[in-house]
Image 1 (spheres, rainbow, N blue to C red):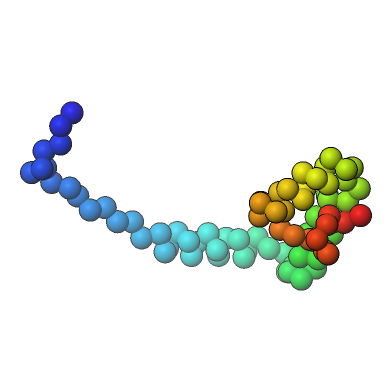
Image 2: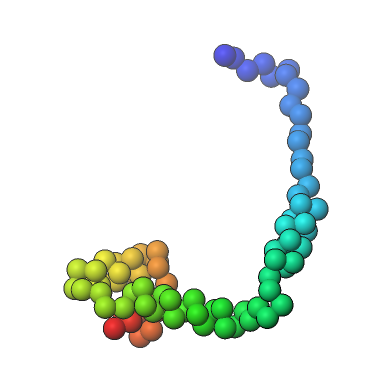
Length: 82
């Protein structure tokens, strides 16, 4: 199939501003009144600490490799939680 240099190209633009506003409003409406963002972040950090705790030697090596490759963020003093 050859391209004809005289063929017309149509510019197509879609403004998602309204849809993003709707999405954010729905998300805020779904949150409970007692939602505590700092507590949620602390709980998430605790979950990550548990996830990466008690690694055996091989798992720790893989974890360290992923941290060095910046696939996972560095946690604590450079090692997974003990």
